[in-house]
Image (tube, rainbow, N blue to C red; front, side, top):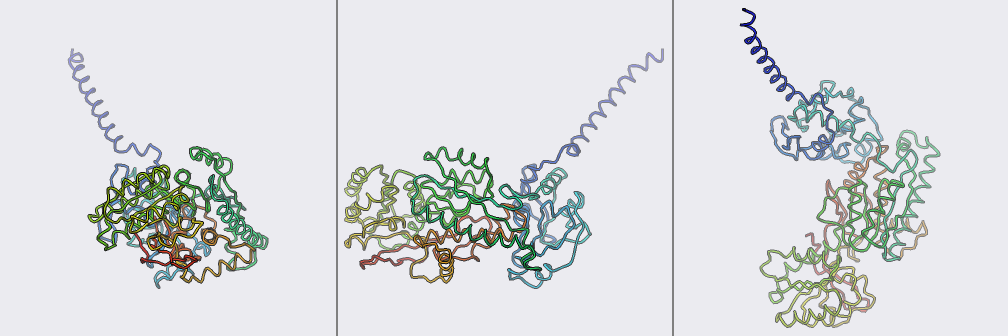
Length: 573
């Protein structure tokens, strides 16, 4: 009888206990489930490169001992760089954090540190730290988490106060450590123990003389460098204690030319096919008419450095990490013209007629010019696209009838350069100034009529002919020794600059053939290497992708040779 009375109560208590256990178990699992999941290396990359945690929040922590932060700009890549190979600036040395370096005992490699030891001007503390005999044991996941959170390395030594102490939960910490395990722990595609593969992309319908000048310069440079490299490889102990320590970095360059089909829509597929057949480590130079965007996008998707192609239309409003350009092309020239016009004090010519061919080389700079003049209360922009010369004449007549005051006329001729040149006398009758891009001045086959020279202005994103650059003599001397005729100096010299910078970059990444590391070296060394004199200055910095950032506005002289002179300072829009 008693058993029958107790049974329902016991059942209720048992059921309650089961429910409580399930609830407690569910809560515990919700707090500790991450321990049973593989760390998310993709999340780790997001934390490392962008400073965004798994919850979508910015990184939090303490820096400089007591300064709290809540800011994604404190991401790891800001100092340790995207490659993980570290950096140095302002007397502070940021240690590398790649997988192979973190999870092995620290060693002192003079070849890896050569650039910082002997090529940087730093303070005494930096000098001493670079030569310190201090070693540390390999990190484990636990000791690395302690270093990230508390600033203590595996030997118990406190890290610099510049190193933030991050507040990361266990899930984010595991993801970050998983990413660091794989960060730059192997060479990127396109390189083996003996050869590094490079390519140059050439589009259809490019100027054959320009193409030959670029490719001949590359071929001569590759042949010359490979001859030197082969000699070094054949004598591994040729210079004990110095250059022989770099022997592990030496690779023969293998260069290919990738020709693109006529239809730009087929370019991505053609590039993908060539890359699948034989991956390359980097693209050097390159040339294509019109929009460079398809090639740019391919380089970004495959993470291939594309070093200094010759293009009038590099993308300026897209994500860009892997492509380096000399400048922004026609977009830069449009911005410089806009800045020049905004600073003119002539009150009579406030109307700016923006004439442009209805194609990429006309539309893109025209849009950039219009944008550069936005907000100007002194100027009115009249947009005038044309698809053929007859349409240009018709629209010009309509504009002349509507506008009674003198006008500034900016012309982006695109593929109609020759035909537009014949129309300049007509346009000059009603224009106070005619402003054109530099390539129009270069492409003109015939001298301009004397009666319009005073109205012609050109954007000129290069060094002036009167400037003196001693490095140009060294480039000429090298080309003379290689029996390379200097028929196209600007293009040949710029090609040499890109090759020279790539050579130095590959030497100083030593055996760490990381594409990101190469780009980071080029960022810091672009202004230190031989500027051949085609631009006043070439320089890059972290995240910068355009080495020359300005232009002159020039006018032709009235002498028979029609030389030119600057009518503005170097304009940096």
